[in-house]
Length: 305
Image 1 (spheres, helix red, strand yellow):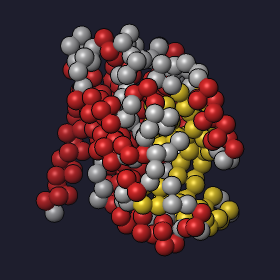
Image 2 (cartoon, rainbow, N blue to C red):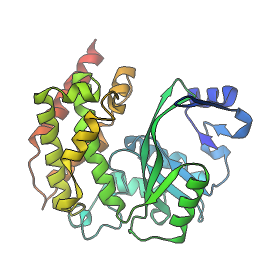
Image 3 (cartoon, rainbow, N blue to C red):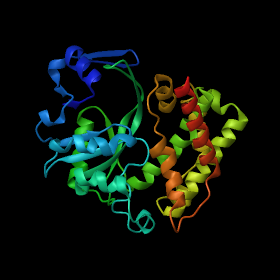
Image 4 (cartoon, helix red, strand yellow):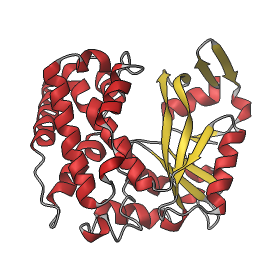
């Protein structure tokens, strides 16, 4: 079952899904699934996958309440830092972040003990409402908020693999979400400012140096919070991946900018600035602040036009 916005829901119900991967083309007829724009029309589910942008998770948590009962597993799979991120992190983030309105609002609707964190390790773009293009990768990285491996974790892994996806279990999902965040910070914000593919953008020495500065600031915050260790991150490997197999890709943030959609600024950039300002963290992030200001100026100029 899909819970989709009105336009997407309309096309899913009328036309099904077209899925493209390389030379492979599959059409999934609409009688193979249920689609609705009203979650309350569906009964409680075994698994609920939250795949909206992280900025929308709090609002979505209210909308999907009817899908969840005491046995439902909620799989949170988004870019950026999710609102539940400090849950079960008393020795790291919890030492600094004592109150969080987004977290409390989210966990009011989504039972914290029923969440499994996930990172989507594949690139998929959508052309139109129901035309899905698979570019690379096949898998999920999944992990429990308390970093244990539970029977439900193994069961989810099996279900994903039976569906033809790959699935790995993380022994520290907080670390791995922050590592994914570093990759997003490296390419997403500056791609909007330059309006270039990843390879072309990083071919400009000044741009690459700004990207390195932002990543280093976010890295230092992760180290201070205790969600990362020094040896967890390899900037050289990230750069090689970006100028190699990702060189011709447009980032998701740039695609959103071109479409006039809201950018994932809050949970990718502003959340790191917020962590930097916490009492006890108290770190400077001048490059992240500068890039955020330039992005906001660019968005404001577009709105004026």
